[in-house]
Length: 94
Image 1 (cartoon, helix red, strand yellow):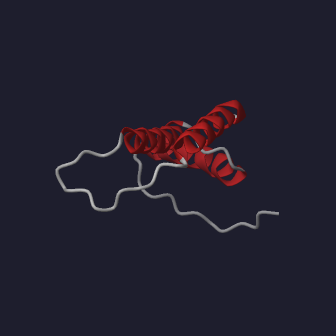
Image 2: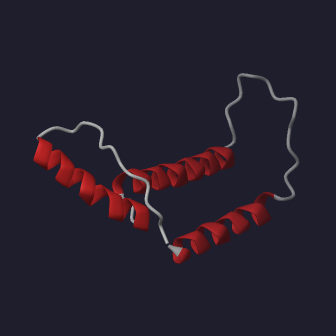
């Protein structure tokens, strides 16, 4: 993952060096299209957000609390043959 971020950063730096002397035009008409560099950058940001969102949806939670709590709920649901809310006693997590 670090390598991917490094490539993206280097690519962004090259794009910056290539276009840093270009003066922005603020008086464009509404009929003109977005510059291709802006479209590429928006596409890259959208791809990053989509990748992070996919990882968040697909990967299971793996912290201690979710690992300790979920098996108890599954067993409770299997015993009662329904998926009603599980009443839980508060315990100290030391």
